[in-house]
Length: 195
View 1 (cartoon, rainbow, N blue to C red):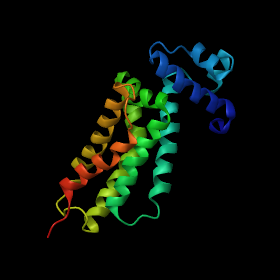
View 2 (spheres, rainbow, N blue to C red):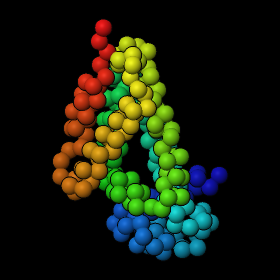
View 3 (cartoon, rainbow, N blue to C red):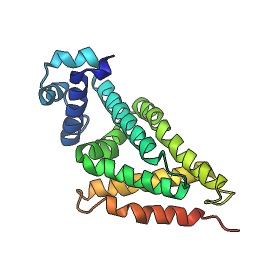
């Protein structure tokens, strides 16, 4: 469908840059069109409005990211190791695309309630992966048997999210990926299985 057309992807990529550089509210559709190298009207062949662009952008990028995590963790048995790959992949993903990091960490947060609800829907696939890793860790006796999966998932996502937000707010002054092991050790250390 439309998602496989080059112009759709051009518009998504242009929107990431324009929203990151101007803020969501100042990111005019005409600026996105100019960045994408398309006429203003072309945008409306693919998207209803600017909000639709933001949601689609997040769906596309998060969909690609979830796929990347699934591929990278596919052959790994250990839940502890899978969790490290998940943290590293998340940090790598956003450190490779600073504009996207600004959009996900800052601009998506300033949106209205209806938009946040749609964004949370997109996040569910990622949160399910975290749940699966944590559940496997409990079953394989890598994590404590009484681990509250829901709270642990919030800890994983919250820690990753906060570290990335601080990195964005500090204007990317340090290596985000280098923090993967520290974040991983702090999380796993709280849940390690003991007899």
